[in-house]
Image 1: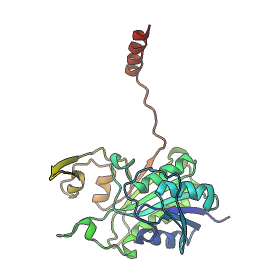
Image 2: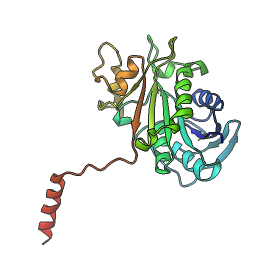
Image 3: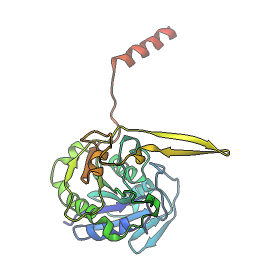
Length: 263
């Protein structure tokens, strides 16, 4: 039987990244697209009580979030998939702090709660010269590296025991640069450098981590996702969902103190 894939994203169904993945994955699987009708970046696992659905040349466009799309695709709109793929996001999703923030990753996490393996794929787009990330135009060719690795993983990962140990794979890919990039199995970076400044009655939030993406000076250690991608390698982080519980005797002692007060 042919591989069944549910494909979604958070950039919206008309973004070049999902089109590139759709074309590549369709060569190895039956692909059902259920994706947001508009950009839903950084919405995390937000869910809607109701979301309008529209026919689209790729599949279905939902007036909702990536998590809405996964629930709708798995429960109603598509055949039962073997795999959920989310992406390809225009912009990397690196570090522990983005795992709950990214709509791309949140779609994969939503699939994990359905016990469906998932892959979230994002493209690292470095700023060049005076152009900021938002000014860089991505074409279908920009996703060549991302479609290559995602198609390979989609076609072969289910044959292995990968998803017996990981609920989903967070894949971050550099821009194409000639020969195919090497691949590194990584862990999410622990760096977190958000701050906020007040200006004329409004607060501006700033992610300082993204200001330090120079391969020669990046402080993230080898083995992390940021270190791998900045140095031109594909990062694959095998992750679990839901989050695990870390049981400590210190918490038991604190609870016992609370109980003693009730006696």
